[in-house]
Image 1: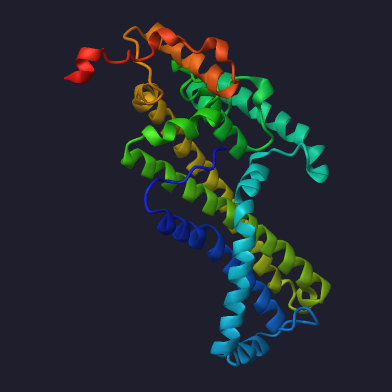
Image 2: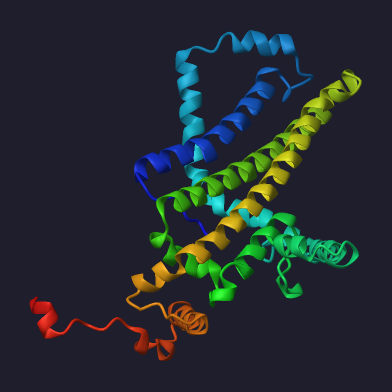
Length: 312
């Protein structure tokens, strides 16, 4: 998935994106872990009275130190956001723990695609949620939705590699469409980060409460904390899938509306015939992505002005 952010004021964009994607989820995780520590969960059965008493002792200095720590951790982890999204997409080839599960996930999604395309006869829905080729399937629903758009958006015009070509066509987009892409990408990153944070909270709180005997002491009532976090994490993942579908639709709009602007930006004259346009875009894609200089179609280059025209 491409890591493009919207055009505009760079400082404002980076600041708002960092606050939304990195700082807020990290603050939630730090608050939960801090609450566990204040309640005495790491040393024994947690106590709500102890939590409230210690919370009342937090002054401005302590709060500032905690905020600085959370901000620093968020700043360090922010560049890894793309890696997190790729893990949730299902790029598990280099992850030992998940590598063996990859084939199980692919098989599950292959059967889901068959059910949609054949059993339910919803090929339009199948193409929106899954890539057309079986070898392109990924083990997660999120990854297949994104890959479906990456494989099909712009294909009818000759764009065979959306991931590589999108950053090149992006400067030619209208401000409104660029803003839509940026908003969809921010929403996707927030949903993915919140999903991961909530599942970490569920694991940490669940493991801690079981280990210190809080679950047994409260007849299982404390399990509501990790259970709620896990359920909200599932909702966040489903939200990420829905946002990915919207993001994929926007990718189609990019190539529908601005492919000819992209051709002009490279110094070519857009052909009138659709077949010639598709061949030109195919050659440009090979030229830029594969670095194949033999396919650069010089006949579509803009003609330099004549001496008389330049003088006028």
